[in-house]
Length: 344
Image (cartoon, rainbow, N blue to C red; front, side, top):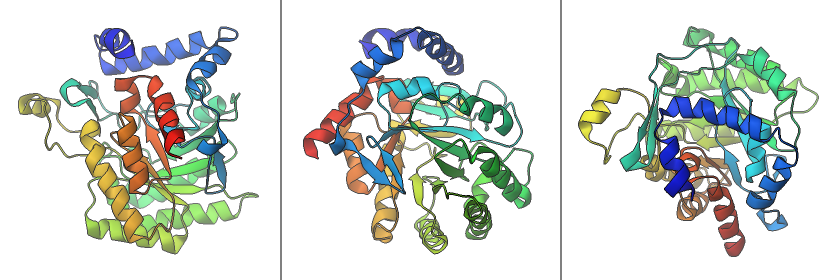
């Protein structure tokens, strides 16, 4: 019903317009008494066999909502009703910023994909903390942190440190985002020297806290094997808790959407089905090369049960949805969890 009725209506409007509309609808709908209860009954599967204990946290199932949708922690409570075990908010920067100029979010309907160049648009750490204080459920919340666009790479370490301190009391784990293609030169922070400085600082701050929170590194799908080797070395040597693989891609290979349309859209990060194969490839490479030395959260192109199983078989301990949720609808979470129960 979602794909035949609701999705065609939603897709009549621009992606960003629909995004903001969905945020409003979720807030209004779940403000009605007992709606949370009924939606949870429909979409949630509770079974101990689905539980995953990863970096000191217990996830009720392997499926989370990736960063990028609930940037400002506005609807993480509402999204928890759809069967997710965790919601990753952000990317969050110290100061509020509007992001890149619109239009900046584009559907590739023929490819079941999206291209975005949002540019870390968010309310800023202080405002987002106010939203996080409204947490109602036991859902695990991850804080995806980055730097402000105007902050130089040399000073980026201070932005990441600021966000870590601001969010520490309100999130369950941190995702250090150094891989978004929509912030000028941000990908340079994936270079070994930059990574060591940023992650070492976050680790140091974490060690001063009464209880250490898991720290994960979110990486791009466009890295070479040599760069992935460097990532593995840094994660192991600094004892980072895990890797999120992968962010969106700058690649445009093998798309069904005409090249003229792609060229007109311009730069941005590609997500959805076209990213699936490469994301799985990166997960497998990291898992095999590191001999499963750390957990991996698999993201990118999960639109079906098969996609999810492929990510897990490649080495992902947990997985996250975003574009697949938009294209396939909310029942995708339940379908994957039911399938995982059968093969567990």
